Length: 482
Image 1 (cartoon, rainbow, N blue to C red):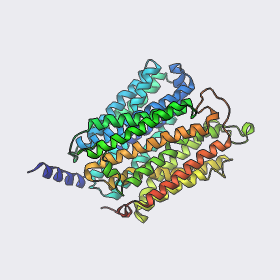
Image 2 (image 1 turned 135 degrees about the horizontal axis):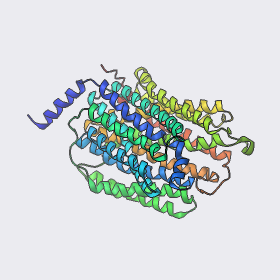
Image 3 (image 1 turned 30 degrees about the horizontal axis):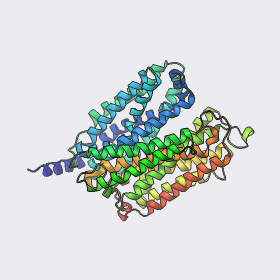
Image 4 (image 1 turned 90 degrees about the horizontal axis):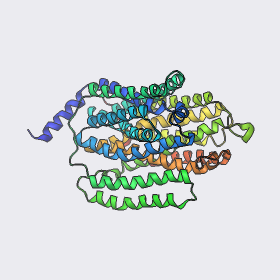
C-alpha cells in the first residue's frame, strides 16, 4: 500500500470521527488565548511600577509582540501543513507557556520584554485549530464554520474572564503570583491539546524553504520596525520611512524566489487565486479596526467633555463596561455567523459582517456624545467583527487545497496583524497631540483626530465588503453538512 493511500484512508477516517470532543478541548485552548489577551490590560500600570518603567514604555509590549507574531506565523502555518497541525499547535503552546512563565518571573524590563514578545506565538492557535477541524470534518464548510464560531465565543469569554480576574486580584496577590496565573492557564491548554486532540498524518509535501523565510523575516521586520518608529519618532522623521521602504523593496526578491521554488514557504500562487486574495485583503483591512481602534476608543471615552467639548468623561469602570459590551457582541457575532450563513451562504454572511463593522464605526461620526450612543456603535461593529474573526480562517481553509489549509488560515492572521500595525501608526499620527507619538505630550487630541480614526475604520471595512463580494462563487455555497 502506498503512502498516499495510507494518508487518504487516514483522512477519511478522521472525517468520520466525532468532532464534538475535539472542539470542546480546542475551546479550552481559546479560553486560554482570551485570558492572554484580556488579563494584562487592567494591570499594565501595576506592571510598569513592578518593572520600574514609565507608563509610556508599556507601548513597547504591543510593538514587540506584534513584530514577533507577524514573523513566526507564516513559518508555523507552513510547518502545520508539513508536519501536522496538532504538532504545531502543541509546539506553539509550549513556547507560549514557557514565555508566560518568563513574564511572571522576569527580573527586569529587558527580560520581561523578550518573554512578552515570544508569548506572541499564541496567535497561530486559532488558524491551526480551524485547520484541524477542517481536516476532521472532511472540509464540510458548515461544520467548520459552526465550530469556528464556538472557538471565537470561547476566546471572547476568556478575554472577559481574564480582565475580571486580574482586576479583582490585583490588590490581593503579589505581582509574581498575579502574573503566574496566565502561565498556569496556558500550561493547562497544552494538557488539553495533548489528551483531547488526536494526531493525523500531514498532507503537505516538500520542506521548509529557509532562505525564503530569512528574506521574509527581513522584509516584514523592516516594515514592522518602520511602523513602530513612526509611532515613536513621528511622521516628520525620515528614518522610519527609509526603514519601511527597505522592507517593501525586499519583498521583490522574496516574491521572485518563492515563485521559482517548487516548495515555497508562502505559496503566492495560491494566495493570489480568486478564492483567496479577497479573504486575505479583507483580513488586512479588518485588522485596521479590530486591532487599531481600541486604544483611541478608550482615550476618547476617558476624555472630559467639560475640558475639551467632546468625550464621555467616563471612569475606568465605565470604560470597562464599554469594552465588555463590545467583547460580548464579538462572541454573539461569531455564533450568529453560522446561523446567517446557513440561510444566505458564507460569502453574503461575511459581506454583511464587514458592512456591520463599517456602519458601526461610521455611526461615530454623527453619534458620539453619550454612553448609549457609543455602546450602540460598538455593539454594531462588534457583531460584524466577531463574525469576521470566525469567518476569515474558515473561508480561507474552504478555498485552499488540503495541502495548504494551515498556510492560508495562518496568513489571515499575519495580514490582519500587519493591517493593525499600519492602523496603529496612522492613528498615532492622527492623535499625535494626545501623546501617541510623543510620550511626553499631555494635550488632548482634537475631535477631528478621532473623526479621522472612525472614518478610516468605517471606510476600510466597507472596502473589505466590496472585496468579499467578488470572492469566487464557491464561497456562496451553503454546505449544511451532515
